Length: 294
Ligand code: NAD
Image 1 (cartoon, rainbow, N blue to C red):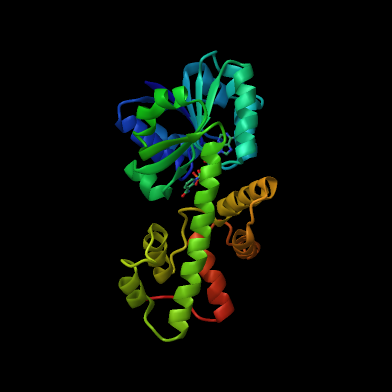
Image 2: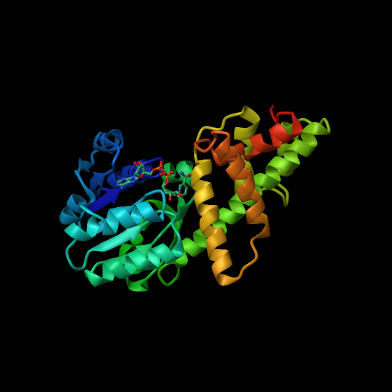
């Protein structure tokens, strides 16, 4: 099938590679020409705008940073809705605010375009392996129609509810990940300051109740002092802001999320916004005057 793909960053590039590997044709666009070139070298065809992608494809996937980017790519000048034919399916796999998904879906429906929100979890390694967890909101019939294509990029794809439900699920995921990295940082600093080798602590507890996918992915990075993204602090600030706004909107307490948000904001102010979110450990390291290393 011919699939349009817009947004070729850390996640978009390997997702396109997996679509190509599964035998699909991909028409790709990004505002950064080098990112387009990277997927053209793998076999994709370059487009010069989101509108041009939509003119050529009846299924379009977007993988963009946040709500304003998706709104402008879909509803803006030279955007998807300027080029899309009636019956086109838009699968937005970006992590954005659930209310924005609903607004974009409404604008799509006015032009006869069917949209679902399908954000992902798993980060770059699982995007490369094609084993991401995909959480979907929107019309179940559209989900069923694109299920096989989602599964060329994911290890699971679950329909969670109406449009926006995918992104609500993703916010829950991001709260758990952020709080988990903060808990890991606090605990590993405690054991380091108390004089126990953090590598031994990791080896001893990773198989027990405290073990987690987050611990397995992030502790080796912290022990190496490697904070190359991965998932950027600035993107996690975006997700926690969306989580706080949604929590306040529906009346759900967000105490711990608010605290970790302050840690992320502090790291952003210290020019670490482009570091991996495992750099939450750096915040603890500065407070404690000590590094968590092998
Ligand atoms: P990224 O910043 O690496 O990539 C985003 C891409 O979108 C960039 O290449 C950028 O040039 C492009 N873009 C921005 N505005 C555009 C426009 N108007 N037209 C065309 N292209 C445009 O981000 P990423 O890490 O790939 O993340 C993408 C989404 O996936 C985000 O919502 C993020 O929260 C989510 N996500 C990321 C990870 C991760 O580990 N990186 C994991 C799960 C989910």
